[in-house]
Length: 475
Image (cartoon, rainbow, N blue to C red; front, side, top):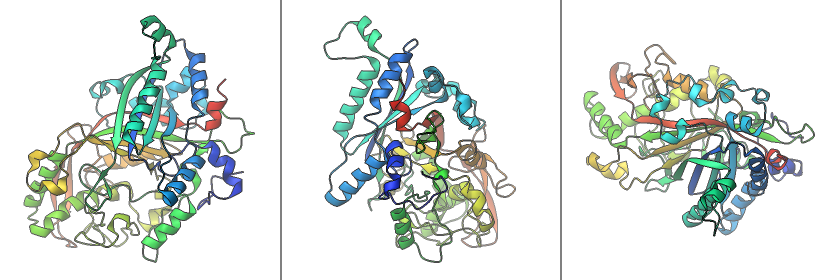
């Protein structure tokens, strides 16, 4: 039997085989594909049994954690892709549609749904149209081959909407369909000139993540100097809970709560505001890059500003072994995105660990001119239609994602007049954050300055990733 208190697990252990076979992929380790499609649907009224039958059949396509790890090993050894990755997640409304009592779930936020969350989100009426509706399920597909992914996406949409070859009669299509397609989001990884994963503002992304597997933790220790000031080694219970609708005899059937948010990024506005802030603070020449690092907490290449006043540290894209114990805000300001959402102080380590999330987001939209190449030509940068498809897994949306988002929104955390998180913070009004910046790196004096928000939440929902055993027993 798998215990949720376990950590540093070895997938080659025979006792873990059933556990890894029943768990959906992408939770404990990212699927690793270049492209991803997210399909959001509402199931058709009075088609419950057909929907159950379809989902039970779809279970054979779902990529288990075991299969994902096997695919990754084959790719590492032979360079052979594992093909299309499939997964399926259900909202509380989706469980209700299928006839399940959501009182079995312990997480209050999940049962309420994102539309009822107290996160200072924009009004639901301003969300992208598809997210304003009641969403029952999300299907996630991913592949390294875009043509294959598009074919798999079209095939799945066709199955859900009842489109079959040679079937042109509308009434037959209506009879066969089980779902209305509400939204389809296409994600694609972005890279800087060093080949490292970045988001649209140009910063290396995904550095700090909880790690669950023995080989990941060994790699982390080899990439980060001792002594370990911060360790991402995490127990399984950070991400997993027992699947509430699978028999207790299936002791290794686990699932995870999933948050999805579409976050649009105004890249042009962000970069222009960075430059204006540098002028206001009188940061000149090489110091100008510190301004962005004081908003994020890292330079664009990943170098933590609490460790260095300039970018270019060796191994910058994997450096994560630091805390803020000796940083009073004179290097990394308290408002900086990665400090605001993970304070990393020694006395808070145990507390912080309870609120970790497992991020699995991917950028969306094409950005043909990356910020590092734009220089002063800000008009080349996009203002909309690009951003991040934010996904994170956890054991409790209430205690993990919502807790972190509320910290980001709190202008008085971790100190009075810190300001909201300039990246994801939302004040419910104009999203303008008044932050305190050091007059110079490691200096004692600080200066207040405003920084607008250039990230807009366009819609989302809370889901649960059931065990594969759940789908297989739907009928």
